Length: 284
Image (tube, rainbow, N blue to C red; front, side, top):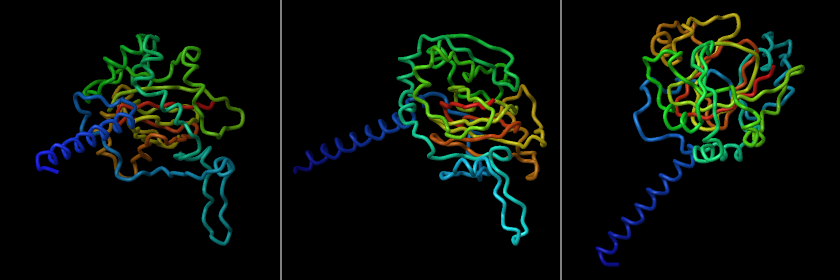
């Protein structure tokens, strides 16, 4: 092969490889990571995940307490369902649901649908209705670190289940339930740096479909120090560094395809490290 022809061949191969890498990135994030202003510098995963990950958890392990042999003279390990969070891996296959949640597919299916946004503070005081496409194209941007919670609109919950039923029917929730509870879905999409400050409610599961979501959790008896109208990002930048190691929360970043279980009345705050798509199954 002549030198000039070889150079052109190598250039073509390099270009095709670059296009393939670009395409893989688009498919991998569902098209949700868009070019534009970068996310705040504080958006990083924790140094060490403090929540156990389980890819082999059975229902009996989930709800029962494991008692060690008496000879070991150590306290029993509490069950997850009522006592501690856990990250579940590989229990369900939501690849079909994930494909339907790409930016292109959701805009094609629900772009004209009116969605209800909540302010991203502890009590979600204000509600705003607008077309889903307008939210995605104009409001889904990285969080301004100086914004207050009631200035930040967040799409999570308040879903019209009849209108979104064609999507939700393809979701497979975690196969665990609690006696006397019923499951309710809450679907959301939010920009990098957004999240909800500390709050608590009943138990539930939260699965990340695209992106990454960092969680901060305290048990019911340990009320965190926070302002209900300050964003999680502001808390992470201003309050978190001042906490003694013993006062810090359990924390972990939930990756796409993972499910976090949080027990009843556990305090928790969330921070989306990327533009994220997620769905929660609340047990009430």
